[in-house]
Length: 173
Length: 173
DNA sequence: GAAGATTGACTGATCAATCTTG
DNA sequence: CAAGATTGATCAGTCAATCTTC
Image 1 (spheres, chains in turn brown, blue, orange, yellow):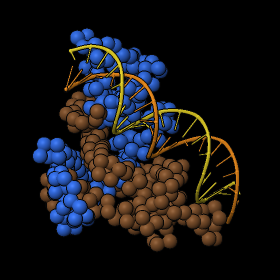
Image 2 (cartoon, rainbow over the protein chains, first blue to last red):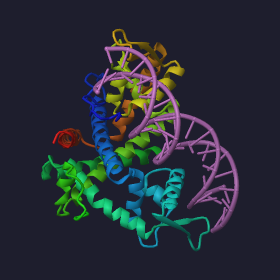
Image 3 (cartoon, rainbow over the protein chains, first blue to last red):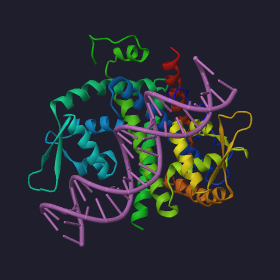
Image 4 (cartoon, rainbow over the protein chains, first blue to last red):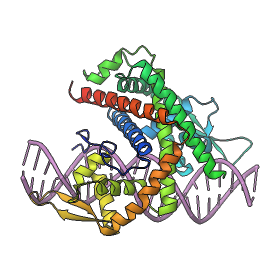
């Protein structure tokens, strides 16, 4: 049985009909952004599983490696680019290596580091998936006008800058 | 995409058969939205852990229950509002119940369903956390002008509608 | 049969601790 | 000591199967 068969009639943002005043606007903005992202992410995860038998983190790792320099990336660099922890990368890389989609080499000049590269099969698998994935995303946004998409892109850029600034303030007071 | 071995006529696949590959901007929009959300979520998760020793899913469940009717919510209703699977809710509720933040009752009239409510302690804990949480979010967006926040909120609403429309098309062709 | 909930196997994510190398 | 990577414990999340009740 599919637990998530019926799309939710109510989500976190919609359910926030009545929060106390204060910084309610920012909170509503955040909840709407989160709801939007969660919807898209859930759809893409489901389709990746149904149509390719894979998952989003695996797809992401292949995507990072595909657009990386041919010599590959270290696990640490992957960790930073994918914005996940180091330990997470270790396990993910191990699974992909076991399936022959990725290969690791010792980095010359630094015997602590490992460099990860796509194998031929990994590259082929990813290429087969990425075009379809791109079309899914386009389909999800198709009811949004080009002008709205452009405006949204720009505003998200500013939002990201605002968040990064806050994080910088946090660690350098 | 594989032109030859066309799988059975799923609507999604038909739609992406004729993709003229100009969808890079939708992909960039999605990746930026995801990055923005991930940044904020990571910050909030970290602060919840550091300052309150709790996690985002726990906080979310308490938040849903706090603004729910006094008789509480069923696990299924929580599942829909939090946009996570039923099985996930079961475990989460069990952990919160074990700590005395939440209590469950049989629903009268339907012996399949369980109703979840905040305990007094759960309500007190959540109230202590939620104001601070709201301030965190406001702080993260503080470099964004009120006009930009309003515009972003509106555009995210349209984006969400577009995604929901695509999901509806998917299951009712 | 359908719906609410639970369970089990699994992937994935985090942190804290550790090992190795620089 | 610092940095790269790995390990172990724990929490979350999914799906698929199952049980009970409607």
